[in-house]
Image (cartoon, rainbow, N blue to C red):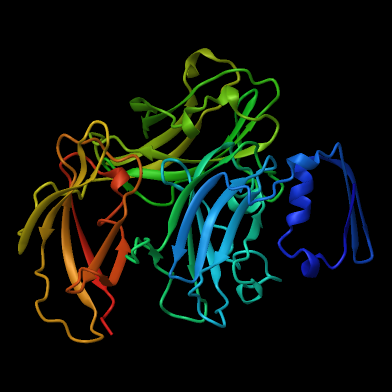
Amino acid sequence: AWLVNWQEEVVDPTGVVPIQLEWAGTEKTFRSQFWEVGLRRFVDLDPDAIPVEPPLAKVLNANFGNQLILLGYQVTEHDELLLFWQRHPAATQPAPDWQMTLRTETSDGLLYATPTDRRPVDYNYPVNRWQPGEVVMGVIPAEEWVGPAAMPDTYQLQLGVYDPASSTGELDRLAPNGQPQGQFVTFAATQQGHTSDKRLPIPDDVVQITPDVRVYLPPPHEAVEQGGSLVTTLLWYLEDSFTTGEFVVRWRTLDNAQVVAESALPLPSGRPLAAWPRHDWLRHVVRLRVPADLPAGDYLLALEPLDNDQQRGVNPIRRRITVTASTRRFTPPDLAQPFDVALFRTAEPATAQLRLLGLVTPAPTVIDVNTPITVTLAWQLPETASTPTVDLATSVQLLDRANQPVTQSDGMPGGATSALMPGQVLTQTVTLPGVP
């Protein structure tokens, strides 16, 4: 089958036909471009493989403010992210120029990619062109939703919808009963392959750490405190000859490079380097934790092979870093209104990951119209709890007499919860928009 691309922004603005042909057959490497006309060839077509209904790998039915519904999504064998949308029956007419914002994180909650905001489907097919009841498809290439030189892995995506002409921010995501559930829908998407490294700028000071591995570790630009963490992006290049090897993070003294602390290098989904792709640069976002008992001072942060002293041709990476005294607090502040409520409970075992101790500043009893409301919350990680593996988020709402939200504010409980220590206390100041 030959696919002629001519005025496709009019006849097939969402790119359904090429996606269906990719499912049904194999695209030959032949691809030609003529004046305003593109030509592609697909062979070994199986008509039964073309889906009749939207191929939702995961159903979401995320209702954004009774305006747009994200029905679900699919990741193709070429790692394209397909998003399936529909206008809500009660949507505003005419529709604003709704935009979609997307954030891609690792399974540990670390930012991995921030694709450019866009219309949900295609620039040439804004929401106003969608027909009532029509299911439309948006296609986001892998190099956009995970970025260049991306690792094969499962990522967490956060998606929101907003009107760029409005100052109200993202639409609330509504439950079936109409209650707000935050402003973003979160879902997991797996990239099977790895994206090209051609758009990735490679620094000059890459280190040939072993004969078959090259690595870049950015110099730390800020000091980190005891028990804190450093989030950084490593760039890896594994030669075809690489078979096996482990790397560790070591903290060495500045004067004589003696090892004072050591930890394993966190790997994406625990996948060993031996399972990584070869002969391409790979982007590895990682959180390196500072030992809580490491005295304040200047050190060498080293990335080295596990058996560093027994290998030939080893060139470890060492970066100077400053560790400052901890500013963490473990004593709760005076509370104007105590709560001590366990939140973010894990399923098995049933332990609280975080406790809301109460309000540091009292909640107002009288609220003026259009006046923002500010409260300060106190949180604590229980002594018996382990540090959360991801950064937890909070949503604070003001309810009316019918227990329906009238305003809300989303945020983080005073800092990155993935860096908390057992018993640590955080305070969070929340400002809710005024009630009209």
